[in-house]
Amino acid sequence: MAKTCMTYREQRRKYEVRVRNRCRICGRPRGYMRRFDMCRICFRHEASRGRLPGVVKSSW
Image 1 (spheres, rainbow, N blue to C red):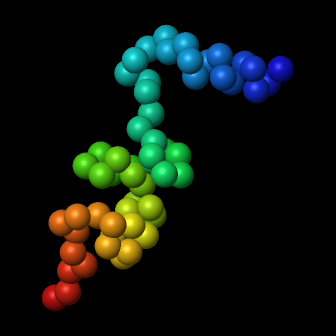
Image 2: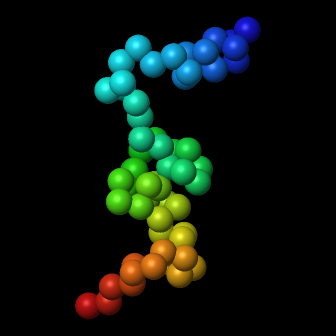
């Protein structure tokens, strides 16, 4: 019953402004980076593996 209610709630948006940005990999709502469409944790993993073009680790 609870799962049915939650899925129904997510499908029905009463206010479009309340849509929460989530990471496309893990679904985390906090620490979201719009430019890369992912959270800071997944961004760090992907960048260190070299999967994000144009992202270079800084050293100074």
